[in-house]
Image (cartoon, rainbow, N blue to C red; front, top):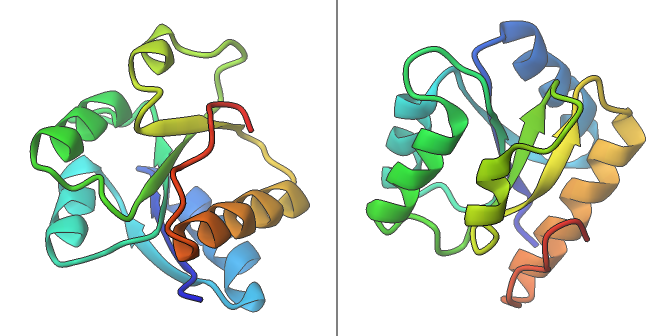
Length: 134
């Protein structure tokens, strides 16, 4: 089973924490500091779980997802939003085909690992992505 994860976040500390948490569990972690870098990684063939920050300078998380969709780069990927927001963003209701859920920052390491493991298993089995919030 391939266990690839891309963390897209403008905060270097968040990218590093995700790497430190996931790599010991056998995940290959790719980091992207912004939406443009995420698109580049996808165009180079990245397939796996994408943990996308919502609030980033330049192209925010939602704009990045719209670009992923318009460029046909959704196949083989599951996207989960990372947010410090308390309430879900209204954009989530428009993107239920692409975005599965929110992971709120700060997150518990155990929750992050179990969520990413579940999504990797779904991708490995080539199943349709689960419904939002599962």
